[in-house]
Image (cartoon, rainbow, N blue to C red; front, top):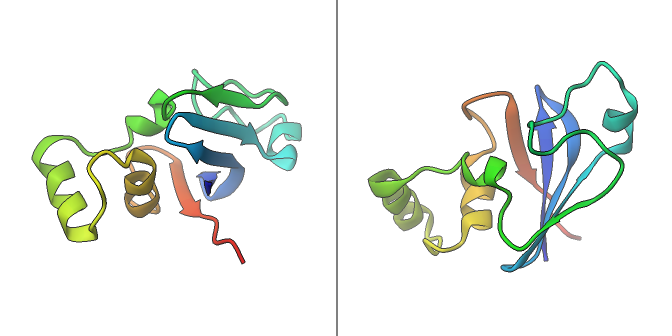
Length: 109
């Protein structure tokens, strides 16, 4: 299991978890959810207290990844399997993303 903290404009918005390569979960952070001034991170993941679950990486997060030659180059340089979308997201979406959303890996102790 791997997990990422999801930030919107530098504020913790929720947690994205990869249970395995066929099961992903996203849940909004309680403080973020309770703040009415904070918008949803995407139209496809509206603010709710429920946990979102998917058999594949949510399209919103998948679309943050590079494609084509750039993806191949990133995977080669970072030594990440080209099929490991979650690993690539964790390695490349910590800063300088298009839009307000970034992620940070949660390091287990």
